[in-house]
Image (cartoon, rainbow, N blue to C red; front, side, top):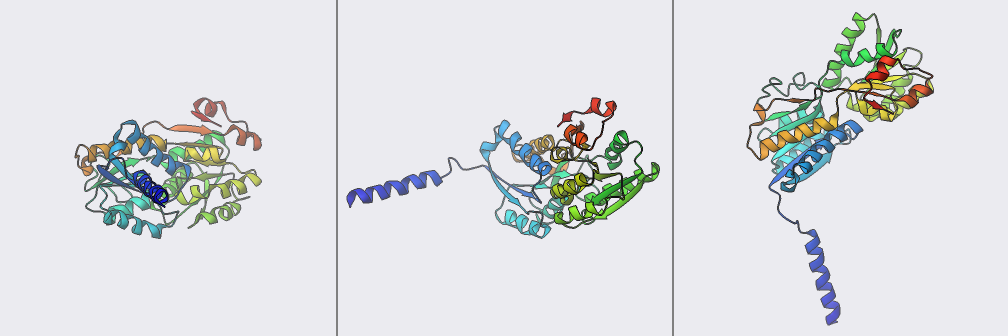
Length: 319
């Protein structure tokens, strides 16, 4: 009985030792993400990688919550971070950033994977965001990214676009696309969705109506990309995107920013705020000047396409 009691006591001590943190963290960072998909995950992973590489991760406790593409969960997540008294909130996507900005007024907020924080009314300006917020942005006119369509398909005259009309980021891109289409004599055929499960059906409705589909940086659509790729591939309909991570998932080509690098830039801002006491509103929004052109040669072969040399030569990522 003595030995048994001793074994139990030792087991309790071991479990307590394993459960106890090695050292108390100096700062707590709450990360709220709208939905999981490669670009948004890359933003978060870049953020954490920069914290690790700088050694700052040793001073930080990370609280991560994902809303699983349910915007109604964003407010409870942010409120939980406020109640937990986190030192900083990293909000990934425009809806997450808007929620954090409205509910966490006394906590520094850093956004990432936000295309146009000005249009989303998150900041006063890119140079001086103001208030308790700043972050990184992949801002790029959608017209610049859609130009890839004519580089690959110079004779394209009907372009389909699927987007969530409830996302400010997406609406801004489509407004730009409409102007691009008008200037180039292209008919823009629009389909809207509110959930990722609707993406495949929306894509199927474009079959026979368009020459190519363009995917903006829309979280709802990108989260449901597999459904789009399935419907498009069955119809031999090419997909061009604004998110380079979609190319590995079956899009033909994309021209856009590296979300992992943007996540690193956001982490650098976090370190400045937490360690150095810099006011978030005085930190300019970080932008990645370089853009990647990704192409999927396997998809091109399946579609029976020969990509132009001008596109092949500029490609920085190939699958």
